[in-house]
Length: 473
Ligand code: URP
Ligand code: ZN
Ligand code: ZN
Image (cartoon, rainbow, N blue to C red; front, side, top):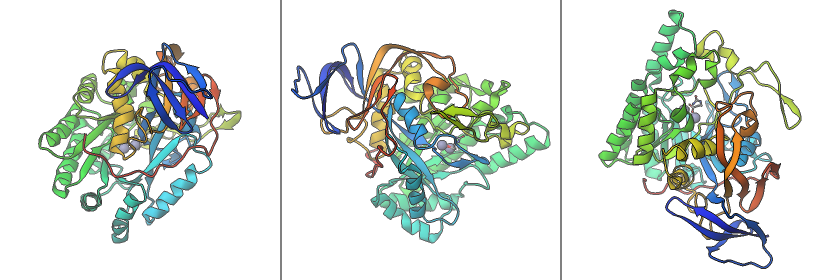
């Protein structure tokens, strides 16, 4: 099957030009002027943009957390992603206590098998590092799981100590694998949370006030310094504030192999949201910060101190007592109401996989925060490069997978539950108007989304065996 996309504005991280693009089977076969292909289906993209599909390298699908479970699985999360221009993601496979790393990955495969619609890879989140598990790490890299994640927060649950962090870094450095950290000082947070509860400070706002910016900055610098000693390449996930950005910049100025991401929510929301009556919707860790931090994050994205914008997609119902309908089926799951009397019991996490690309198009590029090429770079190309998927994914190039979004710059939508298509009862961007939205979305040449039509087949998505991370960007 061939598809010839005619006269679209092809956008990569470095270029934009009007040309034709030929898809042959699952790959991009040709790009150039005045292409013809007798037997190809011709798609007129004049006046439209042709982008590589978005890659979201920070997602949590189908995982238990905070006394419940996130509400999107590998089908519903993928459908939300595809409709909104994301064609690939890397999910966190989180080790259970006592489990081998191979068992963890097998468990995640079982969660995705028969459901996945877009392509996906796994990071490995280590929570229990025995000597056997330590020795298992290099084999994971060889098998295509080339990034390891460590939580420096969530004390008593998945937090690791510095011994675990440092030993993993040494092993990862040796094996050419990337180390990712959730950088918050969980011990200090635990003290602050207990103190707040003892004083009867129980509203969602206290979630943020017990996790101040320095708590994140301290852990960020600790991870940067330990990575320096271990010779490891470090990627700091969900950076939220100017102090943490400074630590990454400091490490990079010293020539260290340090990179980082922020997430869409940190660019558009502040701690003020937590003071609303429905503030629990915005509870995530690290928490939302200030307007000044938003400006610092945008600057860090422009200056390449941060190389990626991801989502940390981890959706929890706002009111888990009420059913919603998803594809004709009733669905409900306990959610944020678990913490209605105590902020520390609110499941931490925010939805976003279906919001990232349209929001960043209108409220990022459209507002002059970043260029369209930089949008492609931080949402598609850099994620692919950093996480060992490039050039198969993340760009428009001959031989690359035909993961393509035809983006109509004039298509108007109102963001919200209906548009994001998360399996969830709320959306953070409810009512936000966007101008510019995906019209057609292809994964490996298959037209998954055609306007409002969904052609996605559960099980059609492929697991990606990733290579070692590329050079530090
Ligand atoms: O609040 C968050 N971010 N929940 C998901 C788990 C994590 O820390 O990334
Ligand atoms: Zn995290
Ligand atoms: Zn996360």
